[in-house]
Amino acid sequence: LAARPVEEKYLHADEYLKLLAVAEEKMEYTSYFACYLTAVTGMRFAELLGLTWDHVDFSKKEISIQRTWDYSITNDFADTKNESSKRKIPISSKTIKLLKKYKKEYWHENKYDRVIYNLSNNGLNKTIKVIAGRKVHPHSLRHSFASYLIYKGIDLLTVSKLLGHENLNVTLKVYAHQLKEMEQENNDVIRKIFNKL
Image (cartoon, rainbow, N blue to C red):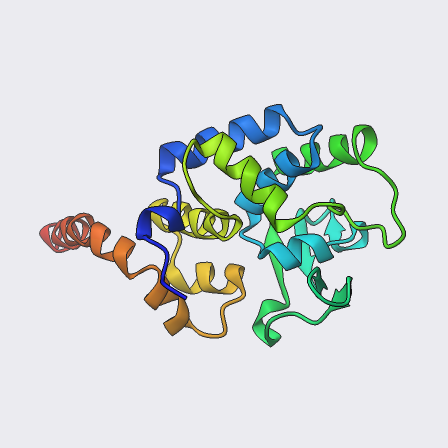
């Protein structure tokens, strides 16, 4: 399998923010709300499908990832990719508001109480392509989430934990391009620190 070109892997900051706005605007459609949720949590597609309401903690403002949904073989809950994939992801007050609105107005009850169900990877793919206006993938939303946090100065260890990576090396490998881009900015910050001594 050939590696995807880097521009298909993630959205630039302005595209990412546009995607969030459009996805929120059309949240009555499951695929759009799924886009929004993936983009603000960095969940893997199987984790998104495995999310149930009892794992959304409105008072603590977090989503707990404890399992996935096997959408290709068993069509049932499955374990996470690895132990580090079991994690808690902080969510904003805005996301909580949207989750409550989605549950009240657009969500349909289902056997397992899943937040997002009846959505294929392909369906999500098409919606992302419509919003972004170019070829990107559900996994690109995960990368965009992480890239945006790195761009906003969140440290790599935190980003790594939020993504549920097995170790920091995985994160470093995936986001090397971005760290390279930020090198000059960081060098300027370092100069300022020592200029003040």
